[in-house]
Image (cartoon, rainbow, N blue to C red; front, side, top):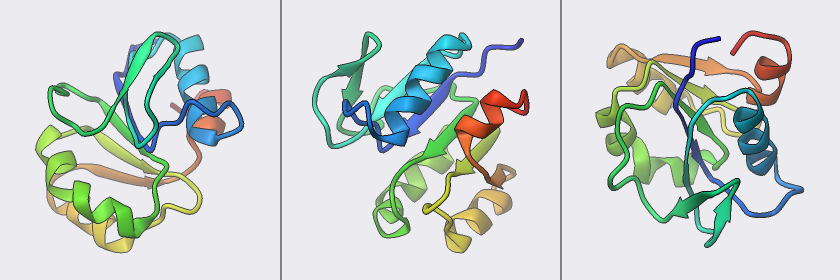
Length: 121
């Protein structure tokens, strides 16, 4: 399986959060992760950063933040030129999805956990 460096936007140190579960599953499947969120700390040896500074060469961005919070990340995520952005349940955002498509980035409304579990990642 090809490694796909993944940025988790909305990362958390709380094991009950879906973003934490995604980090765990991505780690298990051998995909390198970058974490950005409001939480401080680290998850599976990776620090949670407060912003996207110093992050590059990302294959996938998976979102765990609501559409209103996403607005502050539009430009920075698009500058990363990921191959795709996954809009997990509750993060659907037609504006951001259209911006992604206009920039040649695949926008997918799906669940990262389901994609990993079913071999669609």
